[in-house]
Image (cartoon, rainbow, N blue to C red; front, side):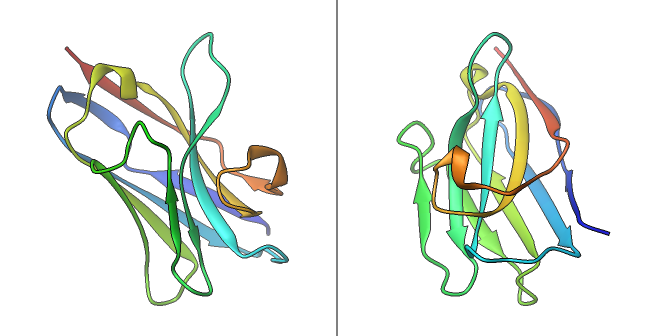
Length: 121
């Protein structure tokens, strides 16, 4: 079963923190990045953070640098997104993706169903 499952979304006040997790199973990888993307209502999906699973190199959107951290566990089949100092503009559905390059949305082969993050002002 090819599957990406996100968890950890929820509601938080401005300045709060959330930790998202993505567990991958049954995937065949060619491009060894996993990433987090988000889409707010009425807006296009955008890249948030990505990690090179085989080496650990990370990429971040300018809007989240210094606030969000992407990481992986030792098994390299689970990634996390630690989100600190959250702002209302971070409100979106967050999607985990696998088998792509950096923050390039169109390169990713696998997508989770998304987890909702709401940041109240």
